[in-house]
Image 1 (cartoon, rainbow, N blue to C red):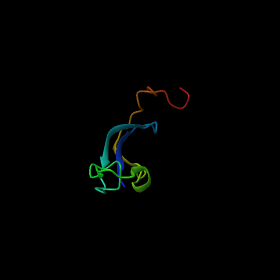
Image 2 (image 1 turned 90 degrees about the vertical axis):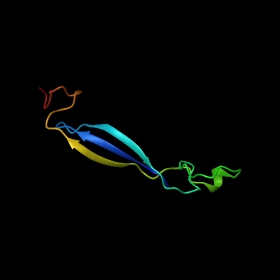
Image 3 (image 1 turned 120 degrees about the vertical axis):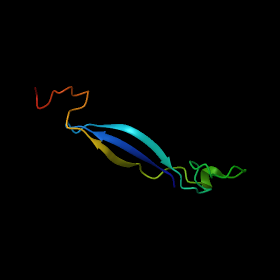
Image 4 (image 1 turned 45 degrees about the vertical axis):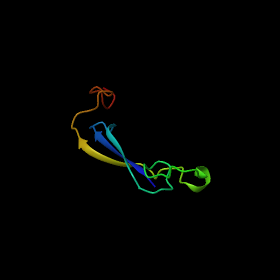
Length: 77
């Protein structure tokens, strides 16, 4: 089955922001998310995979400063 790779940036406050997403194609004809999914008449709902595998998250960048949402306010300050 297909799945998503989600790349994150992580800040010193532990918040993460998504920097990039991409779908990894399983190339299976019985996966409705794949460009290889069969196009002819078929019972897609019962014969094809209707869900993707769980997303795979990768922290690609780490910053020593807090995120914009925290705005430098940490530990109650």
